[in-house]
Image (cartoon, rainbow, N blue to C red):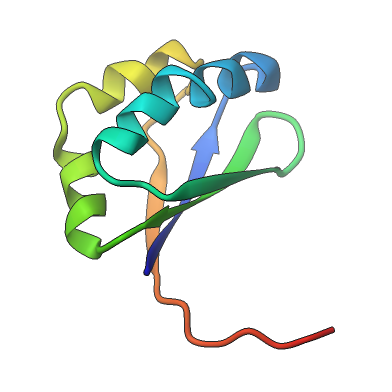
Length: 93
C-alpha cells in the first residue's frame, strides 16, 4: 500500500468536504484510491491521508489534468503540498 499526505489550504471546511466526498472521491476512485481520511488543523487548513494501491496510481492522480479544477471547486486556496508515505508498522495502544 502507498499513502500520500496532503496539506491543503482551504476557504471553508464544509465546502471542501462536500466536494471531497463527491467529485473528489470520483477522481480518487478513477485512479484506484482505496480510501481517504481528512483532519482539520485549525481554520483554513486540512491534512488528508489518501491510500493508493501503488505509487504509480498516486502519480497518475497527480498528473490528471482534471484534478486541479476539481480541487479548486472545493475551495482550495493553493495547490496541496504532497508527501509520500510508506507504511512500516502499527502498534497496539
